[in-house]
Length: 132
Image (tube, rainbow, N blue to C red):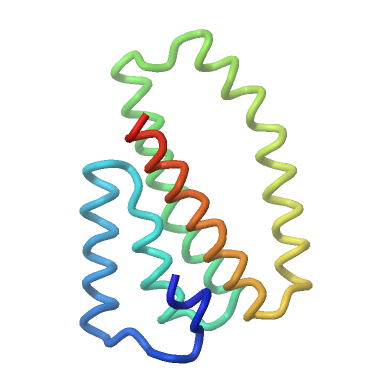
């Protein structure tokens, strides 16, 4: 929230960045929701939006492949789940393509603000999910 409202006030110290990176791993392992902590670290370390997107994707793609294999082995992928997944792939691919085109046109500051807004929305959705 600080970086969204007060972007130039305070830089996160190196130890705080590493703490965020560690928290990303812990939260991902416990709740499959460590992305916000990863973004805290990545925003401080990666100053280019393309570098940022590539790095975050490079972390999440192998992780999601691992989770998909794990869920398949556990029998969680039922026919209804696979149908929903199949329907979700098309809008997901369109969103990835559109996001790439939009990101190329955005200034770095605007890109970061949108990133922070999406993180806040994700946090609210996760909190609502756990509370309801």
